[in-house]
Length: 140
Image 1: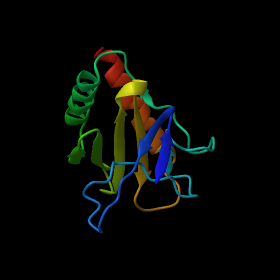
Image 2: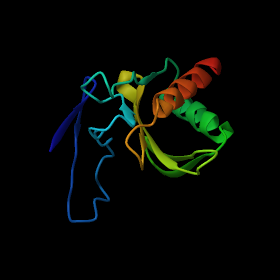
Image 3: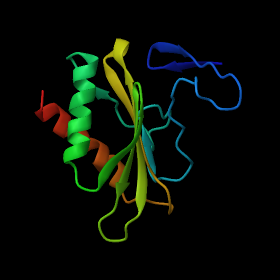
């Protein structure tokens, strides 16, 4: 299977049922307005990817630092260029999934932020990504 991500072509190799050798990707947003993704093709869900000028590993380290310093955000898994983060809301303790996929050749980090429950997020996921973007830029 081939997947095209922002000018970079990736081959996704899947052998067996474990998926252990599969290159990470970001799922598309559902039809509901509680998700944003830099890979979305519609304006309702699209958000710009995170861009960087420094070395890819430095950008990834900066992202990890921002996430670590952000209240109620926890990195739950990391696999090479992929990070999965859980963001927990303050009052109702809802958990949202935030994913990042580093594309070194394009000097960007694709992002997807989605609510696990509910229909609308009242812009929470978009604001979250923009706060992460601003924090990363302030560390450059």
